[in-house]
Length: 266
Image 1 (tube, rainbow, N blue to C red):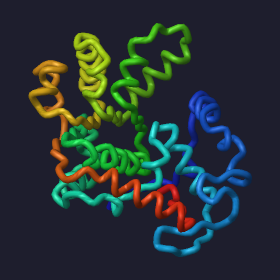
Image 2 (cartoon, rainbow, N blue to C red):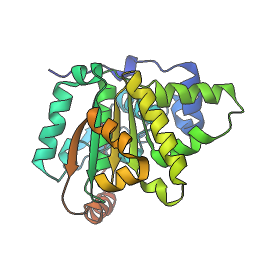
Image 3 (cartoon, helix red, strand yellow):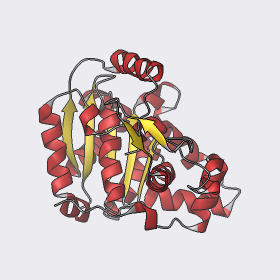
Image 4 (cartoon, one colour):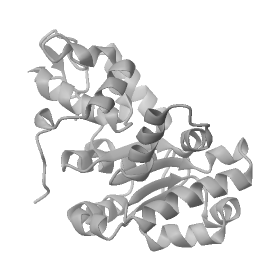
């Protein structure tokens, strides 16, 4: 049985809380005055067209911990039933989830490649949310943002400590959309940044999730064969196939807005 903890009683550190409140001011008011789902109306209408009473305390707790982990609001409100792709992919990821403790102990992450719009980012965030609810410390970011942070000059010790904690010491790190930054970044900079972060995490037994639109040859060209070899050695690898689901997702969201439907944070 998969372990789940009650995030209402999991406390963030003072530094983490301060940073979070700056980005999400409503959180500072507590669930008695602010809710990301019902907006303190007390209820919301689900995609199944059912009016339900809102558990504001749980909604705020989930939102807080997901936001602290870098998960965007769109993915906060999606679950496994929203994935419309291959059942084989779900089966592969289920193997990771069912054996997560051992995969984490061995420092193994997930490597998802495939065409644009097939759901790689969504799948990675769904796994990450499950990891958070199981009590793991996680962080999600794009690799382009990572390069910006990693190569910036440190003028604040607190910022440097935050980077160290999030990027290098989180039990699970998601580097989303690896390869996109190659259009605007020197190859040597991207390769050295990727190499430094990945090798430190591998050395310390910290799993990394990676999503990319690149195939093996492009990834090898952009970052070097040694890195590709390291990724594959330390990852459960899945190729995500299917059509671009984003146009359909857009239609669905517009329809839900027009019908007054609200998706809870899950």
